[in-house]
Image (cartoon, rainbow, N blue to C red; front, side, top):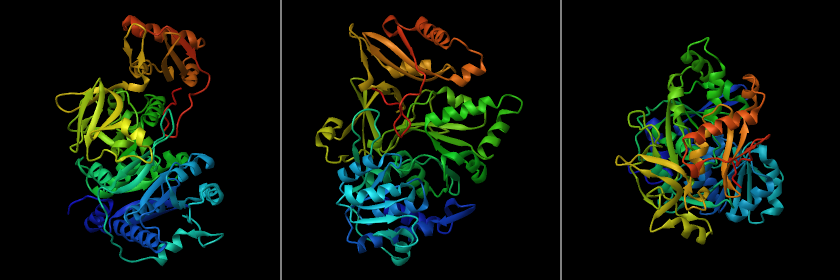
Length: 502
């Protein structure tokens, strides 16, 4: 069957994998499992509920961590030809209400960890007519029980869905400026999830660790995972990652570079008394073979570092506006230093060193932001804002961000990310931002104080200056760092764990 919508993906998986386990997760101390047929049945019940409430075609928001209820609710909303609006559960109640109003949300499905939001919307979001709790056993104070609604609305459900119609609005968690509501269609998400065969066998055990409101997790962990028939284990808390890795023993995980770097620091700290592959087995449950990296730049050296522990890192590249994957390395087709080969449904070109991409995964635009949409889309081409190039084999290389570019008085252009990546190779440098201050290039560094203590480094500024001097020795004059600022606290970050640039 042709796959054009998320409903097509759910039907395909139910027909193909049937009673195979789709999701595995903990409820208190017990492990529960849901099959592909369960996902189909429960998401249809949500679709029927939405239609019975007169909400078909309306905007429905989801707030919470990754749960089975969240996942089936998302598909239930999308597959009723309505619009799903995932919201970051880490935001303040005030910020969430502002996004709900901006997205014209009329129904809210929430996790009880954000009961404060359910209370706040009653006064702050007058357009919201239905509020549903994922955990409530009974209807109370005008808040419905998800569990009861699913049982009451069991049955078959089909409706006509326009593959190119609006499916979801995802708010970017940008490092600068106001977040934008990225409009993605069913075809955007379905094509991104299905266009590339990564040769992952059905039944492969994965574990989802990233926030589900971010498109990398949503498309790759969830939509692609369902399409190819993985058994996805749900991590219930960031505090339980180590325990859950040992419990679920995944073969595959998706991670962002910040987490990969912190994991490597722990592996390295384990020392050399045991073989590296034994250390990795103890840390990851014994079966982990592959880590897919995305969401930010990862130093290519980590590919080699993790290979020593018997783990393959596949570096990819994407953005919310492209649903999100633009390129990825594969185990059998990769180039070190690149962020992978363009997906089959994507083409790219460079305009003034900026990468522009085109294809079926490129967004419809930003919700109710026509000016920003016009700035980003031109004749179907998405301006990524990333500097780089595409080689003759369609492998993509990123060198920095256009909006972060430092333009010096002599006309030279300097990409701060390139310098940051060089400095970050030093163990003492935990976080760094390179910028222009008083016509000089400045490096602001948050050092790894634990590392300094362990290595008995008493004069941290002097040691950091040595690292900068070593960089300057081989750098062109115009790219040399002439000012150092040492931080005592980490940089402020957005909810995607990217440093906020001023």
